[in-house]
Image (cartoon, rainbow, N blue to C red; front, side, top):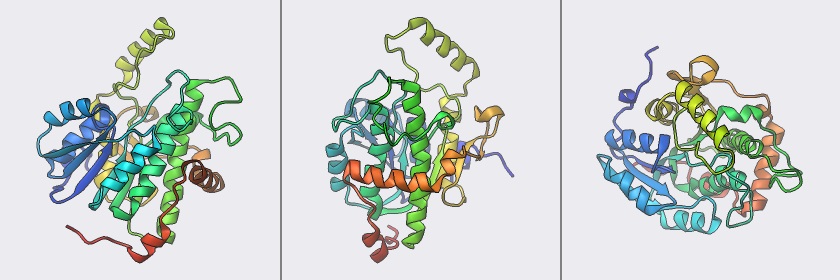
Length: 305
């Protein structure tokens, strides 16, 4: 089998792709590659100025629309205003280990942004999605557990990495349950997850808490990590490769830190179907957004443009 590279992305002319958090990191690289392949790419970003700056450096049809995954009202507005068909949704945006804070709706920031925000966005857009939903997780999910008694990190002392790992595990459980529901509804849409390995993105930022720890982490990351371009390959592969629903794509190298993308395994917790279903139900309650099964049943596939 040939090693997948960005040049292996097929012609995407006529397709519309929405990418969250596409103004930086692997999201920006993913957007640039898909736009160069002929797709119409929509950068769904919180900061319009940064989004426009990123779009200005890309060739092809690139648009910028505002979306704050930490605010359900802006997610609903984005979904309402996006009336045209979407071929691929890439749930890429995320936050990693910030000091404790809350979203506009009162959720712990990492769980609220990384999981609940994308959960709501996907379900609101799903009636218009024609091909697949790609959600970016992390190998950090292996450290995660879903604590249904403390999803918001309010009862126990806040540990940013624990909350991050929980949110990334939630991404994989969401993907699995989404695919189950899509299949049951007779939809051709695929739900696929990916992770970039260790990549030099802007997720690792100094936040004022422990400068020495930050410098050590930064030095280790820069020594061991792959580039943003290589880190985007699993996402690109997940978006265009002929692979089954609920696949998980990551780097093929040692400990999945780097290397060409391939299908990889996930933790036993990420395979727990009971937890996936319960998390989905809780997420519906928290966001007020539900799976649009009735619409999918009557519209199993939108016509191609």
